Image (tube, rainbow, N blue to C red; front, side, top):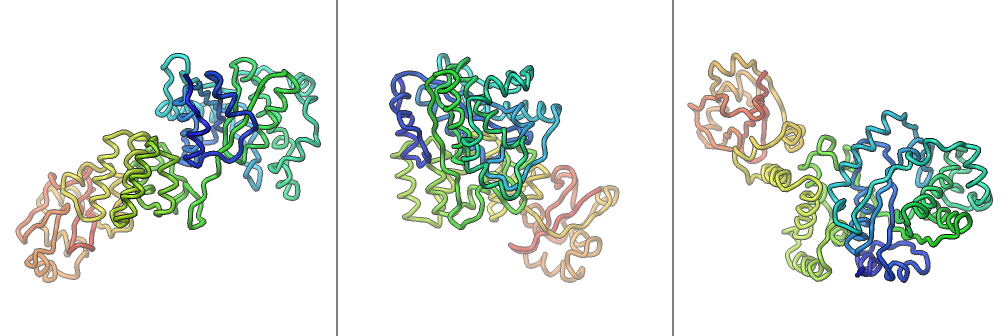
Length: 426
């Protein structure tokens, strides 16, 4: 028994374009559908989460999702949404990226649940031995140049220049749909709204070349309420790979979302029911300063991308940032998270031998580091109970030991609530 995938996607605001007859066809039987992911990096980023969640909803509705990793199309480059031709990758780089992307997708989709288990496919498998002359004879003849020129992704690039490689992309992607329709019984292709032209080329190819049944659904491109680009920060993209974007930075991205954006995000990026979401929105609107929506989204997405332990560390790091932490919270941070929290904090270095010989707190604040202007200032602040080591108050007689080291290398010194200093032991 299948559920209504289109109804679910509609109330979540995740339908942009849909081919007539799609909803009716999906309600008749368990159907297969796919989304393509270009492996241009060895990690997906949160911009891909919309499509990942689309496949998740497709599977939850009882259908069979295919995630196509474009090992072949990654060598060509899709012009959709691009102002210029991008650099192409070699086979080794693509193979590395494909393996990494597959591992990330496996966190979201169930690959072992019977009839509608998810499957991963790579279009390099059917393109690697294909002869160019065979392709243009057997496939190219079914789609006219006029038809290809009418696509927005082509028209938008005609003035700035469009290589034949990129021009041919829609035909290559169209063949993917044809191949999966013929060999995997894939009836629908899903994707972002910028993919509509490429997807429709696939349905046209299926109709003309194979006489099969095919449908298309696209999702809106997410735009933030303030006009800035979704998924971008001052440091670049927000990646799913914890080595590229730490779980703390990932968590903070969602925590920093505006109220207007959060009402949109909670429908798209969580699996909460409509009733629960409406309840969370109502609760948030009563006490917006508590950021109920942002916390619900950040916790749910961080767990699904990075796991519960990573969420605990992200929350601990956030508590540190807002002054609600302990020494143990600090010591739980990775080096990357530690410097993400204390970005731009003044640093000074002391030798390990000097540190281990017994470094007094007054020297650590002034004589050896220059954090404070003088020993006298250091003593006054200590007497006033204003100095902390790793967020815990200390007195004049305190001596730093190896027990205080974070990541066996750093000590966080503080004066009052707002002034922090990092002592680096090397």
